[in-house]
Image 1 (spheres, each protein chain N blue to C red):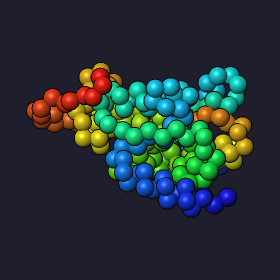
Image 2: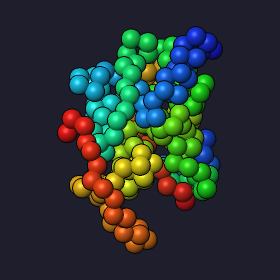
Image 3: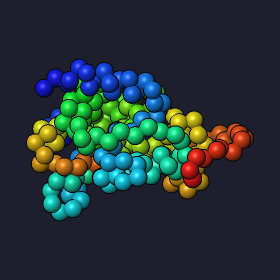
Length: 135
Length: 67
């Protein structure tokens, strides 16, 4: 089934307007799915601002849209700069490895690193402390 | 299904809840070499898409490594 063109256009607009955008089941305050909740947890830990869209009211049509734009049909989905980063598995792996913090342009939060960086990961440059909203 | 789509792949599927619909797939495949993580997951998802679409798999966690 082809995606609804109006919905697709709307999704593209929202992606343009939100550097970090999460499609999730439920809302950050009341997630309706464990995987969505875990991605919200990661984003909160990163202390980054993000937009969130509850997919549940439009699940079927939205699957068609994300299938077309990103070849991905399950939720949650995290987009950064309009590009699909991944679902829960990829987001968690990238949070642990430090790749996500780098992509988001934030410092790796303490406690997020599970494994030490093998290549001595050039000790992080000194930068001013982050302002974390609502933390 | 995954091994059919990715010849040479080592596939381990774990039934996480015992209900057969929440699965974890651990896949090591030569086809992943040089692919981004998201493309590796896309390849695995494409292989099981039918089962995701008909709802017989509700949730699939994926871990991939190039062979």
